[in-house]
Length: 166
Image (cartoon, rainbow, N blue to C red; front, side, top):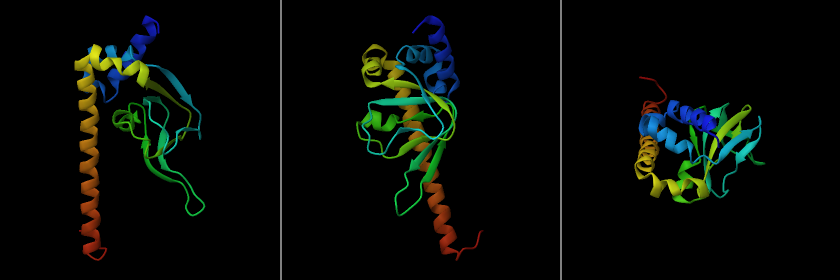
């Protein structure tokens, strides 16, 4: 990638929530490990549940849905909407497990891709940036777990009250 593209990509990474963890210098370092930019057309799947995870992504434009795909017995269920700045597929990438959900574009979208063969060298070449990246991922997991716990408690309270809101 040329210098102008690296500067543009670094700015995109820095402006994403990830940027508050890696800083401007970390965003510039991460930009050098980007594998490419991936367009995903409206309605197209980025990946399906069970697919191998050798790449993770950063949404730069558009919206994608984390979905449980439709079957004969049930319709598709949108679990979460991803917007610019969100990471996609990073957990399966990190732990080496297949994707647990499918990702489908809700509109035309563009993502930065980080493929294993181009991103893994970051760990040895830029360990501080790798650590800050992992810190961002772990923080997001903590926030998600706390949100699920709050929602579970609200549901328990609602059910135990006989359906009355307090």
